[in-house]
Length: 410
Ligand code: SF4
Image (cartoon, rainbow, N blue to C red):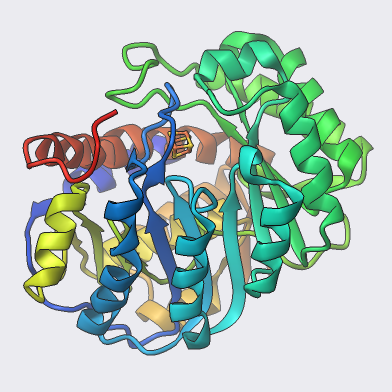
């Protein structure tokens, strides 16, 4: 059996998604990161699957307080990082400052923020820096007008992309990540050009994600082509290497010698606050309601706004953990044992099979994906996206659509 088939079989049999609401708090007995979702946007990009609502200052004004109340309900006091994403967290700077002021004192680690290129003005960047944010991820997606139009990015064009990256890199943040999206349908040259332009400005990290075709977006109904995507990624990896960047995680390239990482997706354990935010404590993976109305309703009544839960046994949790560790470039077997005990026989067999068949190589106590391993991880990540994330998000989006709408419609 191939590694891919083995894993799919295990995941299908083992993971069950439960629909629960108003559950109790999650216990975190290990250091965790904090993620805060700010769902407000002034536009709706056609490709976007993320939870968002049209920005309305009145509706948004009570959001920071609701987030704080949610944290009180969860009862977690300290975190090893803060990542803020959305939505467009940089749209309303007063709201953003309010959020950061409420939470930054409980964080010992990086303060990280997604920045929309249209918000990367000198004035906003200065305000962002004053909040103590030192890691930023600039959501450029592309430097090409045709590609941006295809994505339905209404606040952005190619000129603005270049101005934004220049300003962010020169603003003096401790770490700058630039996000690009590539669509195999556009061929490798347009993505390679985007990567070259990003590298011209010298950010610390460049993330290159394949365009995913989520339900409910303009691209729904079309399909990814992993083989063609992998061809594009190989070209990108070579171009990156020629310019002093190397592959750091499945879909990121980092400047040689850079030790830090913008890592919103591959943290070990995390508590998510806000609509649609997910949490993982090593035993449960939960996702909050997508409805802002329901979110406020739960918080008002002192209930935790969770809508979906995956309860994990040790095998499931260690499998989940191992996948994300490999996505992040290495699985430390000692760390795995210290967190989850001796690996379950099926996980050990899977890792051994992956090592013997050349997907992973062992470096003392660490397992590291080989080139062939990264190819497999790419396919697995897409499979997981469509079989778990898209399923949960679609259900939650449909449930949210049935609730009264808080704020103005699109
Ligand atoms: S891509 Fe970003 S700005 Fe566009 S709709 Fe999605 S969350 Fe909003």
